[in-house]
Every structure is written in structure tokens, then in C-alpha cells.
Image (cartoon, rainbow, N blue to C red; front, side, top):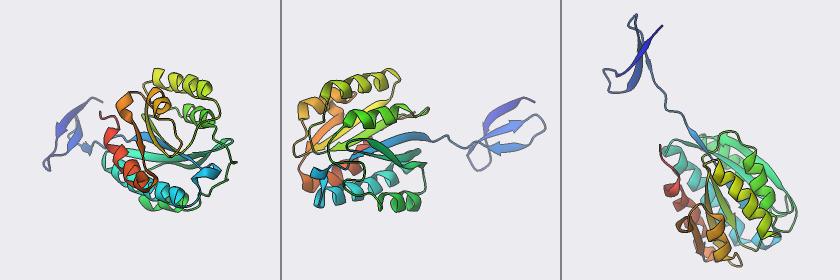
Amino acid sequence: MRKLLTLNKEGKLSLRATDGIETVAQPRRRNVLLLVDVSGSMAGPKIEQAKSGAIDFSHSATSRLYATALAVFADRAAMVCDPTADAAHFASKIARVNIGLVGGTTDLAAGLVLAGKFRDLAAVVIVTDGQTNDNHAALQVAAALKNRAIDIICIGTDDADSDFLKQLATRSDLATHVPPKNLRSAITDASRFLPQG
């Protein structure tokens, strides 16, 4: 049965079948992964800023038709929350994030490898405050993500290397370095860099 894409009486996109039955077309959400450093140096106000920023980010991403996933990295990486547009569910997951959850050092490559396991991912937002264990490995994995047209947005604070973050990001303007007190707002604002369309 053929269907015609049209605007219904309420002005919403819909599919109209030849028999006249209309179905409102639901926009498909894209996925973004928020990848947060939980190494030892993120302890204290920084992790609290990151968690608050992540919640704000998920709200903003949802309004842009994104579902937000959450992963953490230190010695290794782990998923915390699968992609969701449910703000309460996301907030309950990030509330359980603690420093040292997956070790104490900063293996960013492990987090990027985890991102690469997503079949349908539009962007990765990295939040870190330090030097990664292996810049070369992280850049290699990042290159593979970029080849899949996945945008990489980087937010660094404290000892994070600004030049490295610019190399890691899809474009240098997608890498920012902020004081720890501005980490929350930087994470929140990152949603405006999410790819559209």
C-alpha cells in the first residue's frame, strides 16, 4: 500500500494511505553519548559540576530530538545509561556516578572504543580534567569515529591539554577549556553544537 507524506489538519507531518487513513509521522531521535572522566582528579566540586551539567545537557539535547546516553571512563570505560529522552531516568542514572567507579587514571581511548560500539551515534561529548594515558591511541580511535561521521565535542578543565582536545574534536571550535567552576555551563552549552538534520 502506497503512502503519501502530507500535513494533517493540525499541521503535523503524517503519512496518508490510499484508503485515507493517516498516521502522524514521529521524528526519529538521534543518539549522543556523554563521556565523563571519573578519574581521581575529578573528585569534589568538578564531578558535581559535571553531573549537574550532564542533566542540563540531556534536557537540552532532548529538545533537539536527541536521546542521551552516558558512559564513564578512567582505567577502563563503562556504560551508565543507554540512550534515553526520559530526563528523570537519566538523572537517576547519573546520580549513581562516583569517582573511582572504573579506576583512577585517565584512559580516554577506552571511552572512545566504547563509543565506537554504538551502531547509531551522531555525536560524542567528552568531559575531562586531565591528560589521557595515551594520546596517540585516543587520536586513532577518534579518527575512526570521525570516519563514521560521528562528531566529537570536547570539554576540558584543569590539566586537560587544550591543543590535544582541539586535535581530538571534529573541528577545533568544538573543543573548549574552562575553569572548573564553569564546567556545568560548558557541558550544558555543548548541546548547541550537536549536528542537526
